[in-house]
Image 1: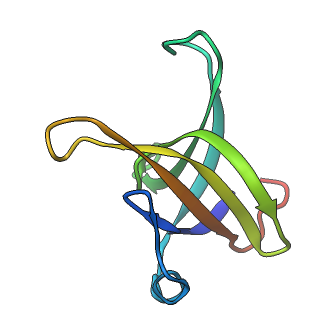
Image 2 (image 1 turned 90 degrees about the vertical axis):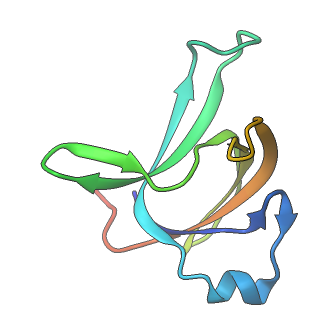
Length: 111
C-alpha cells in the first residue's frame, strides 16, 4: 500500500500536533509481516516497514522497522500504528515506543 508516513513520537516522546502537521513525512510502500523465525520467546511478531523501490527489482527501508505492531485506528484517510523501534546509533541498542500515521496515497485497490 502506498502511504505518506509521519512519525508521531521522537525517541518515545510524543511530538506536538504542529510538529506532526508540518512534517512532510516519507512516502513509500507500507508492508506488514508476521515474523516467526529467530524470535527470542517463540511467539510470532508483527513487523511493519516502509519501503522505497530502486532499480528494477530492489527495495530498501526508509525508516527503522516497527516491531510488535498494533493497529490503533483505521479511517478513510489512513492508518494509525503503534509499536517499538530500535536505535543503535549511540553504540548500544535502545528500544523505544513509536507511532506512525500512514496516510493512504493514490489508488491502492487491486495492487
